[in-house]
Amino acid sequence: MRKLIIAIALVSTMLTWSSCAKNFEDMNVDLTQFTEVSPEAALQGSFKRLNDFMGNANYSRYWDMANLVNATSRYGGEEGGMWQNAYVFVLEPINQIKLTFGADPGFNNRIQIARIWEAYTYSYLVATFGPIPCSQANNRDYLATVKFDDEDSVYAFILNTLKDAASKIDVAKTQDRLTYDAIYGASATSIVNWKKFANTLRLKIALRCSKNLPQLAEQHAREVMSDEANTIIAESETTKMLYENVIGNENPHFLRFKRNSYTLDPPTLNDYLFVNFRSYKDPRLDAYYDSVPLANAADRYLLRDTMPSRNDDSLRVVDYRIPHFGRPKSPAKLPGWSALNGLIDPLGQNVKITSYSRLKGYGWTQQASGEGLTAPDRPFIILSYAESQLLKAEAAALGFGGSKTAEQYYNEGIDANFAYWKISNAQRDAYKQRDGIKWGTAGIGFIDYVSIVKADIPADPLSKIYIQQWINYFPDQAFDVWCLQRRTRTFDFSPHTNPGSGVVATPWMEIPMRASYPTNVINLNPDGYQDGLQKLGGLQNDINPLIPLKFTKAHESKNWNNVPVAYSTRYMQKWYGDYVEDLKTAGITYTLISTFKP
Image (cartoon, rainbow, N blue to C red; front, side, top):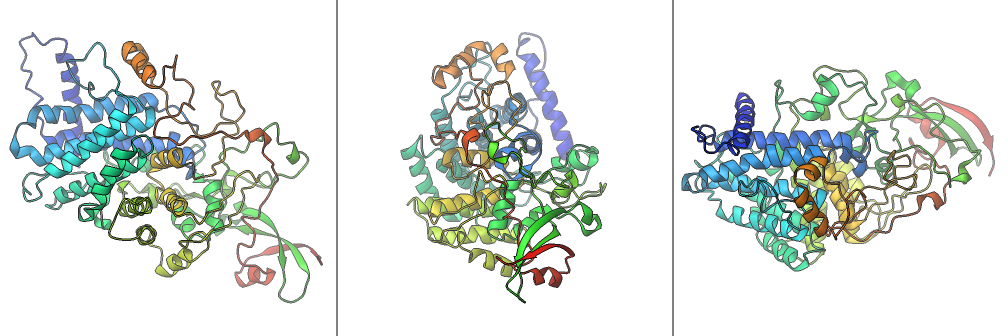
């Protein structure tokens, strides 16, 4: 940990000195003073900066976009922070490593690790903004104006960099490795794992840009699939940031929700994910989220249900409380939803903030130490073994090769995710046999509480794979869900119905297609900004969040104001069984409201 803290301090000093030295190159100053920072020092700071940022951006931006966690936030506010973090604190240290050690063969493997992390960082930037500085970025020859590279050029650079870096790693030279590695540790196998991460990431990026660069994407995907031994093939090879239970290097979720005495609405179960979990009896509901505890039974959602009896042919209307409850992304009603007028809103009755299921480990008592997802030493997942298998499932389904069938990869991806969350094999196998989850079957899902979105899963193989990728990205990889939805449009995500944005002409907001360039880019690099606008399609500005990027699938936004609506709680009903007697068997207290014959 101390090495990591020292590394960050050294990198910050190096960057400050570097920016000053640009303007005073003729001064009699030892310009090599900080360029001898080791790759270990520079890279650890780069690793931590990016992962810390993404952890915090999950809360402020990506969780809501991904419909994984309801963080009661909106779709903006991180563009400038991401730009600054990426170019100054992540990419500049990498640039310094390449300048200082690039010609030294004793640092070959460490240079390739730096290049892999560089490509990974650019994959975030290009999927966020589209055209970005790449070939001229962090280059002293371009100070007054930094031109932008178009989206296709950046993706080609990422793919080719990952391929080249992986091929140049010499796994036999175990001494040429990071002696302190916050991603893979300091073992001799870390070099092998970096090679596997590069190849698996290359497959992921190839699939992402298969629409705008179909031939190049297929070439890279086929190459990776023909060399699976050099991809992530085990949980021990999962790429993740290794945090510690030490001040200065804790998981960002712990810092926000535990150490910093977070007092706002807690992160809660998203209603769309809740509907999906309920539709397919997914046991990951209890792995991802804490139920409202029995000690707070009065806070549990009070459900009205109509249930048959095993003893007669009458139906019982009963009230009972359920342990989990999902919060809508936005509970506001649109002006056109007049069909709801005069009806009783099922979420407006006896529902408090404490009624919603909370992010696992957040708990109902503010524990100082943290646990589960908010544990200080919980790793931050970057690319998991489960994702690796699901990416291969997609590639195989598209005909890009592989040693197994798409179905085999798909099932292995589910198995890996369930194993990671320590869910029993019996629960896993029962889940995999359900219609919609089982390969080749279609699933009829529930509708949400205002009946505007539905959790159906078609028999189509790709749709199944995308659904499992979405669920697997919980909780760290919400950014990847944003990318997945934009390129596939698989998910029937509901909109924000009170976006609070003066830019949006409608009273709702769907997920943005991209982020706007931050203000400091417009002010400090105006010619570069204009270059970016031209490469976006010759725009006057890029304020509109629905400007499509090249990798995204064409999408026609719904007029959510005109969709048919109706209140429904079917996705919560029959929680403990199909019959009223099942409530008593489960030890659940209920209130009988009425009895009638249908």
